[in-house]
Image (cartoon, rainbow, N blue to C red):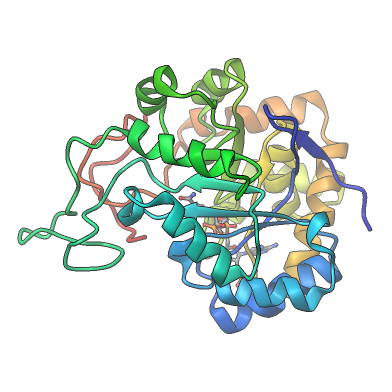
Length: 316
Ligand SMILES: NC(=O)c1ccc[n+]([C@@H]2O[C@H](COP(=O)([O-])OP(=O)(O)OC[C@H]3O[C@@H](n4cnc5c(N)ncnc54)[C@H](OP(=O)(O)O)[C@@H]3O)[C@@H](O)[C@H]2O)c1
């Protein structure tokens, strides 16, 4: 078992710094990806979500790996059409995964969509915009998250895609401070200011789309590639290792065994190899004209993020 860095959450629970992402992993592929990651590649952390539609197969991969449940950190997420029914949705994810508790349950996006709308995941109004439940403060969802934590169905609770603006609405009403905030964080969207805000409040940042999501476009970056060459590493190692070195939880997705393995060992090797100057260079890449968000679903509401483009090319 490879030694791997862990981060202690604000409730004392330890989370492995590297986790396998599962968004867009086809059900028939994710079984093998999860099994391989746990059994062969050293991962002990799997990032799932009800909305990914593959929780049953993730659960099958966990079982096939033979790794004891207690050694694995499993996260799932509450989808937006279920903000009124956190426990029911959690129970569904647990049944899908074949587990009796989660290590972490996240509010996937801080927007409540109409549960009785024209689509189970993405209900829309006649004009095509998303059918949002208005007058639903995030604290109404969070109260229910706190309740499932109290019941012992999850070991930790957190949020995802929450800007400072949304957290300022939530925190005054929260008895439990979110353990994490899972965000789009990578070389081109480092969100330095939001991360300072989270650190000051004991909320651990989790970095999603660390390679730039579909097709891993950040592998083309010249600065990351130059630093990789200097240390005899791959560019993917530098992109992932940068986020590990910053102290974030990092969630690379792959269904390709060789990549699953090298993302794990390469990230750890890169995090160890970087000099202070390497980190400073990587910290400055976005501000040098490369700032770019890649995951910007058309919620039709202002989530309060910087650099959120008017146009949305990607449908989650
Ligand atoms: N909370 C949220 O709203 C949210 C949003 C997005 C993502 N996430 C989580 O974060 C995870 C990661 O984000 P992501 O899936 O968007 O993207 P990502 O991990 O940045 O990139 C995944 C892409 O990179 C490819 N890839 C992986 N390792 C590679 C390597 N070493 N060399 C070349 N290509 C490589 C994968 O291809 P193959 O699979 O074909 O190998 C896939 O096309 C998700 O899976 C999900 O668990 C959460």
